[in-house]
Length: 540
Ligand SMILES: Cc1cc2nc3c(=O)[nH]c(=O)nc-3n(C[C@H](O)[C@H](O)[C@H](O)COP(=O)(O)OP(=O)(O)OC[C@H]3O[C@@H](n4cnc5c(N)ncnc54)[C@H](O)[C@@H]3O)c2cc1C
Ligand SMILES: *[C@@H]1O[C@H](CO)[C@@H](O)[C@H](O)[C@H]1NC(C)=O
Ligand SMILES: *[C@@H]1O[C@H](CO)[C@@H](O)[C@H](O)[C@H]1NC(C)=O
Ligand SMILES: *[C@@H]1O[C@H](CO)[C@@H](O)[C@H](O)[C@H]1NC(C)=O
Image 1: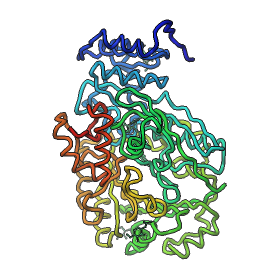
Image 2: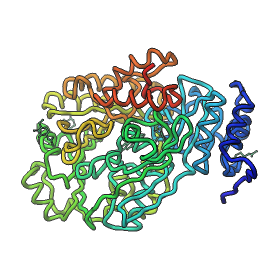
Image 3: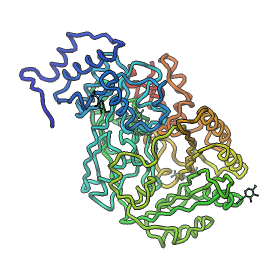
Image 4: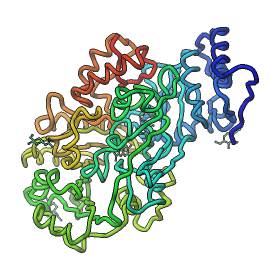
């Protein structure tokens, strides 16, 4: 597959130097010629062949193919609408050196670049630029190799792989190893880990980002660096400081965690009417973060219709790293209000629990994890997040349920913290939501293409968010960077004002770690090559 171009007399670097010294190319607004210049530049900067028809997609070449590739992994349909700016072209590197060359060439040509791994960004930042056009899209989806080393308890995984593929490749080699990252199996490992990556195993082992051992990254100078090469500051920043601020991640080396051969899972669903006086939900708020760390019980809130009446259901979805009998004892002691019975529980392997929690229909073969497609499907949606430090009183819950009942398709997840999440110091990695957090509250709403007034859903969630203010973290009101929310603030073209603005939204995602992120950014990318609506700004 790899076809090397011969460079008989000159080294790669001297060719590069020659090229850059003898040409100056001015940015142009015509994307067709921009693309040609980019391709020529790429060819001069890599030894590895790229078949144009399988790596370059442009509207001028084939608009239906271009749209297909643009839409392929984009999860939020809001950012694919006609009015959204589109990349001039899409390039899919098939070798790591193509990523390196892409950075050098977009710098040289003065073209703004966006990078996409799994396309799940909440604000579409990986494939839409609303502050700068033209822009191009570097899509990492053809770089998705995974190599699992059970002896070493580790795996190297390229950015374009999904977490579902990673889980599958681990389970293929061992039934007693796993990796603690997200639920939805179509998340791109590249973007996912840059923001933290939480999931089923977080109370026992922390986040995906807490379990990164090494990384390969291309920085703003086009240098390929591993952990030793980038140094501990940059290695710190990329594990939770958010995507596309510091460089392009080529691959992560992750730590595999030990698991029992089987786990126990359950789902218990209550309607509002069944949970009289919010007794169960109130108790969950008190105990969910304090139960043994082998037990993870989250709550999913959905709207439902019960005999013609609207209601809200609360589904308690649990996973226990152990046997059913031990789980029953733990629940009897710690959370009897839920009324969990042995019949509610199912024993399965960890990889089966990934399907169970990932929304796949029961009985799906584990190979569905390789489809790189979410069973949830694509949607028009808006999401937000909060961190809760004290149980929300019944009066607060009342207003919350009232609001949920007013929306068409509201959805909420409460994720318990505690356990390992409390033991890791706030400054260990940029993700700061640690001890003292009892749960994360995630809010979202979705609608369909035919909806005549989509703004009413955005207004609804903004109203809910302001309603929740007294019940959640304050000074700053914290938020999860992987649930990107441009309502919190954003960068503009006016680079000078960005740092001031970012002093407001930055600490919400990172608390005091924000200052260190700015200082790393100022050191590794002072010219702000990697930028987007919520990238970490450098100090000017
Ligand atoms: C349906 C759904 C379910 C989710 N479930 C979870 C969950 O269970 N747990 C959780 O923690 N989060 C979850 N998330 C949030 C998810 O972690 C983030 O959206 C994450 O950023 C997705 O990564 P991606 O590569 O798929 O996205 P992308 O859209 O490709 O990228 C996200 C951001 O990272 C940047 N980026 C992408 N690739 C690279 C790279 N190689 N190097 C540097 N920067 C890069 C992009 O430019 C963008 O800014 C969910 C999101 C959705 C839509
Ligand atoms: C354009 O791409 C589509 C696939 O999306 C393909 O079916 C079609 O043949 C292509 N057209 C040309 C002219 O290459
Ligand atoms: C539906 O709501 C009505 C009015 O509040 C109530 O009288 C009726 O009992 C409810 N039905 C059910 C099944 O809860
Ligand atoms: C977490 O914080 C509480 C008080 O807020 C403290 O008592 C406890 O020791 C802390 N735990 C850890 C592991 O730091």
